[in-house]
Amino acid sequence: MTKLLNLISSFAFLLIFNPGKAQSDTVVIHSKSSIEMRADIEKELTESKLELEKTYKETVEFLDSVETSDADNYKAYLVQSQNGWTKYCEGKCKITEYQSRGGAQGGYAFYNICMTESNKERTTELKNLLTEWKAEFDN
Image 1 (cartoon, rainbow, N blue to C red):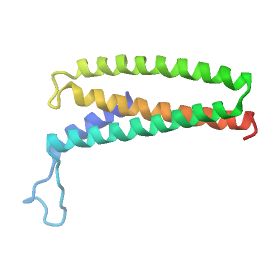
Image 2 (cartoon, rainbow, N blue to C red):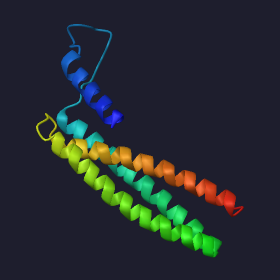
Image 3 (cartoon, rainbow, N blue to C red):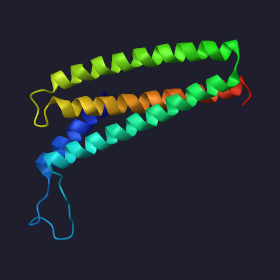
């Protein structure tokens, strides 16, 4: 949530304090349009979603390759937690979207930012689990 507030603050700062060409000939700042900003947000969401899916798939495949009852249990819990995590993030980010509905970018951009941050957090979590499981099963 802190990252979201920082992004919003940065966005507001850029809108308010964006120096124009007349203020400086040495500094060239290209301020992005709302459309460009939304495109960047969408692109980052897509990238985070792909990275999460890749990490999740790699983790499941590793557990499948171990072929022990412990690995089977881990996999069952992983699948269950992933399904729960997905529902939780969608609900959490819909709250963020609704809270931001009156903003200049509209709420949907904030939903996407929230989902991107959540995807990155979950990807890190899955990578840590995979590292732990590889150590546990000596792979």
